[in-house]
Structures are given as structure tokens and as C-alpha cells.
Picture 1 (cartoon, helix red, strand yellow):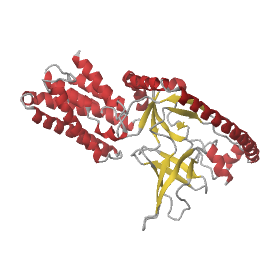
Picture 2 (spheres, rainbow over the protein chains, first blue to last red):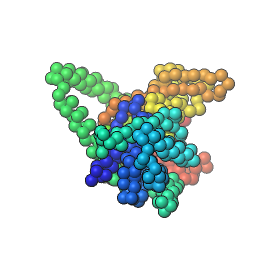
Picture 3 (cartoon, rainbow over the protein chains, first blue to last red):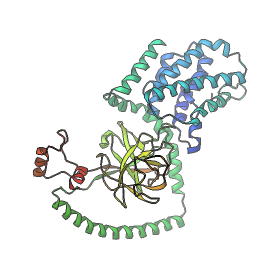
Picture 4 (cartoon, chains in turn yellow, purple):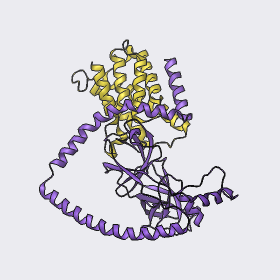
Length: 148
Length: 293
């Protein structure tokens, strides 16, 4: 139930209209919510489900079909593999590792843009990694759970 | 994992290379419709409430303004009908059929972002209304963009400022033709390949030229903001500010342009002529233009 709610919320946040200056600050909501669930219940999150949700995000963003699906599945499978270690990390360290994952996500996406010959985004593209990491405490902090 | 990765790689390649895939894609956009509407509806309601709460004074003022505007427009229509008559005569002289009235449809923009780095918007009209890919979209002040994906309930519009957008334009003052390409950062367009010596200055209005057969002729696109002559470069760097209110418009116009076609005997002549390409049936507005030059 909570899972469904958080997924719908993440998908809505993905397309919530933002003012022009904030457009490039939008965190990768679906990705961090998926990372959260992969850490919270690593044996119950199915990769197929994650892939399908990524596909829905692709459709919402009218991206290349399968691009986000591939990247999110890739990162979530990494998270599941490493979950035992990361669960024990303090919050600061978790934020750092979330930052690195989103950075990985964005780097591969950038590479795909490059291979396809799309016009490449500017420096502000990379801000999403920072904002995603900053959103992590909202999801994870056990004393004041705001979102989940 | 491996299977999913392969599946997405296959999907990506197919989507990138296969034109037929666009159909599946547009059908898949149904999945996005509920989420888009859930996001859109509260914003829509707040706006509606906002307009419902506007003061009477304001409404009266608006009403007066609209009346004044209507009078002005009426006057302009009379003027135009005169011009129309003249242009009708001229076109009959040139053996081109006069183009009829284009069909218009008002579409509402959904309050959702699509992609931070692609300037695209979602409108609430789709296949049932006859929307097609490549259809021109205007707002009250100028060219807004074109449709790039048609779904069963919504369609995707690419703004003129998107990096992938290009519009054939013509300078109103001199008739010089150029191509206006989106800059990708939301505010302006640039003119491609305008040689350094071309007569174009700040403040020139650009209209659609009708070449390329996508946009009808003579609609305002933008105004030249800066013209930079870079030493050692063959082309001038020209910035154009679009007329359309790309960030503020809530409603846009979808247009079904009607194209003028040649009279049958002219078409026959054209078919025989060695100059015309065999694949072009020559029934368009802009061909008529070219032919008269």
C-alpha cells in the first residue's frame, strides 16, 4: 500500500510543473523512491516491477522507450546486491552514496544522449544529483518521516 | 536483470530506428494520461477559482477593453476583406486556386512538465479530433510549435524554441528567407545561414514562409533581437524573440492548413516540364510561390 502510494507520488512529482529556474533542480524522484524500497525490503522488490515503472516514467517524459527503465533497473539491482552494507551506513554516508548512484544514472543517460546525437544538456543537468541526495533524508530519516 | 537489460536495449534501438514504432508509442501514451490529469487538475482548479474570485471592477475593465478590441478587429476585417478580394484576383491571374479557410481548434495545455531539457508541452486533444504529427500550433500572438506525437487523448507539442525545432521564415520587410532554429534554452531562436551582408536589422518581423509545407504562410514567428557580425565568419549570428507567449499561454490553436493547388492544366504542364522532380505532385502553396518567381 505504502509502496503504491509512494510510486504514484513519485510519478506525479516527475511531471509536476516547476518554474523555469527550478526546472533543472528536479530530483530523480522515481529513482530515489526505488532505491528507498530496494533498501527497505530488498527481497520483495521485483526487478520486473521496477523496469515497468521505469517504462511508465519514460512514457511520461516522452523519452526514448526503455532508457530510464534500463538505468533504474540497473541501479536498483546494484542497491539490492549491496543492501546489507548500506543499511548500516549513517545518514550522511547514505546521502553520499545516493548522490553517486544518481550521478551514475545521469552519466549513463548523458552517454545515451551522446550516442544518439541529441543536443547535450548544459552544466545544470548535473544539479539533479545534488537535489536527489538532499531529498534522501526526507525518505530515510526515521525520526521524522515526511513522505513515507 | 540481463533479460530486462536486453529488453530495454531492444526497445531503445527499435524506438530509435523504426518509424512504425511511433504508433505503439502514441498508444502507450494512454498510460501517462491519468497521471498527467491527476497532476493537472488541482492546478487547473486553483486557476479556475482564481479567475472566479476576480473583482467586478476588473471584469468591467476587461469587458470594456474587449469591446474596444472587437471594434478594432471588425475594422481590420473590413480592410482585410478588401485585400482578400484583390489577392483573389491576382491569384486567379496566376492560375493558382485560392486557398480556402483553414480549420482551427482550440486546445488546452495540461499543467505538466515533460522533460526539463526538451521544450515540449502536453495538450488535451488527440487522434479523435484529427490531430496529426507535424501539425502547426499557434497562440494568439504567433507560432507556438508543432505536434510531434499524437495519442488517443493527449498530444505532445514541441515549442519553437526547442533545439530540434526549425521553421522556414521570411523577413516581412525585405522578403529574405531563412530558417529559424530553436536555441534549446527557452527564450529565443536563431537564424541559420544568413550571410553577413544580408539586409536584416534589429526589430525586423519574421513570418512563416510556407516553404517546407508544414506551417501555412504569413503567420508571425518572432522579432529580430540582435544581429551580430562576427569577424571572419560568413554568417551573421541573429537572435530572434518569439511572438508567442510560450510560458504563459494556457490555450493554443491547432490549425489544419488548406493548401492551394494548381489548376489541372497547370499541373499537366508541370508534369511535362523536365525541371520538376518526378515525385512531387506540385499541389502546394509554396510551390505556387516558387513558380511565380
